[in-house]
Structures are given as structure tokens and as C-alpha cells.
Image (cartoon, rainbow, N blue to C red):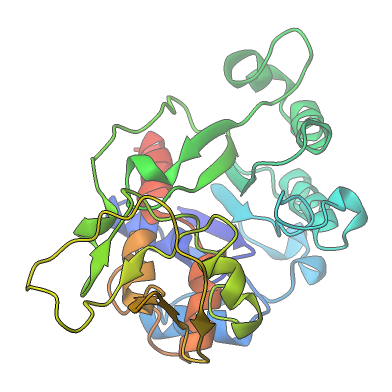
Length: 306
């Protein structure tokens, strides 16, 4: 079995394959971020790095059984400017499609964020034209669109993270709810909500610090302040007024010190092995984890190959 992973990042797809015991002979990874490549090669040194997706030609590759990837989402995300296909990064979806045409894999998996219906329909119709016979089985028969399945990572992790998945892997249904809560993954501190919000690639940047601590996004973990009894838990329903932010990503709110999640806690949110990403700086770890996949969702989908 040969796998081609496009926009491979730190090779979350490879973690998922190994988690379910699905053996493969060669794993070709297209990635340009040097930090992501470093993490991948430290964990999976046999990975074959093949560079920028725009420079890859299907004729230079052996027979590929599975193509998977999550094309850049910044242009589609509701959190961004929503430039859609006017964003150069969003246009890389068509490079994914080009390689589907050139390589003709038996199976494919594409992931992206929830987006405007108009953008989603472009993807649906493009994939529908590539796989017209399978549209009848996996998409809508009457309009020729290859529709995605939306899966929320909250079903398999402590993080709310709704993503769209387009695939011709058979038998994909919603995963069972594992009942994992935020308090189950926090290392030290207390929590005031059941699930974490979606951690993104900008989580560590100081410029976004107030945005995480305010505007309705309650910071989810806080340190035990002086004078509290051991094991004390806050029952705060609303986020307090922001008093002070520090460069170390802490906020002081009415005498309570709130903090961001640690890299290991973010790995747990993404169901990534503990310290998998510890081969680069903390800032880069947050970025890679925010851009990564929730492994147990991908594993759930890839089980259809077995």
C-alpha cells in the first residue's frame, strides 16, 4: 500500500494509520513547513518528503492507493476574511484535484473547515465530476454533488472542532461519543466548561491573547489562587472582566490567575501522542497542533479501509 499525503503538516495522517494498525509500504509527504517536516522525520524517519504540492507530478509517483490531505483553510474559515477561492491558499484545493486526476488513487480523503455553502458547493461539484458513479453512493444523486460528512471532534476528544470530510472510503458514519471532557485532559488546574473551544494555529501569539481571554471565549483553565482549599472548583458561569494580560499568556481576573492550555494538553485535545511535537519551539508546537487533525476522527474514517 502506497500513501500520498498532501499538506502533510506533522504527519497526523501517519499517526492515524499506525493507530489502527493499517500497514503501508511507502508514505509520501508533501509539505513545505520546515518545522512540520522536522517533527515528522523525528517520529517517522522513513517518511518520503517530496516537497511543494505545486511541483509534484503524478507520473513521477508509483501507484498510489490512498491520497489524503487537509487543504489550507484560512480563506474558508468563518474566523477569517472569508475570501474563499480568492485566497491563494484556498486555490491549492485545485492542486489536490489535479493530483487526484493524475494519480487516480483507489481512495481519497479531504478535510477542511465549515465554510459558506457557495464554497462548499464548488468542492462538492468538482469532486462529483471526478467520481460520478460514487456520488450515487456517497453524495446526492439528484444534483451530482459529492457531499462531505461533518464530524465534531467533541465526540472523540475534549475539544469542539467541527470539520468537513470528503471521502470515498465506504461505510463512514458518525463516531460514538467517548464522553471525554476537558477535565479529563487538563494536567494541573481546574476547568469551567465541558469541552475546549477549537484550538487554532494562532493560539500562542500574544497579539491574540485578549481575544482568547475575552469576547465570550472564557479561558478554560485556571491555576489555584492563594487561599483556596485543595480540590476547590470554581462555578463561574460568565467570564469575568479582563483586568490584565501578561506576555506569558496568563490573565489576572478578579484575583484569579487564568492560563492557556499547555502544548501537551493541546496534543491531548487533538488525540496526538504526548510530546509528539516536542522537537520544535513551543510557539511552533502550538501552530502545528492548531493546524493538525484530530487523530481519532481520522482513524475512525480510515478504519473503512480495513
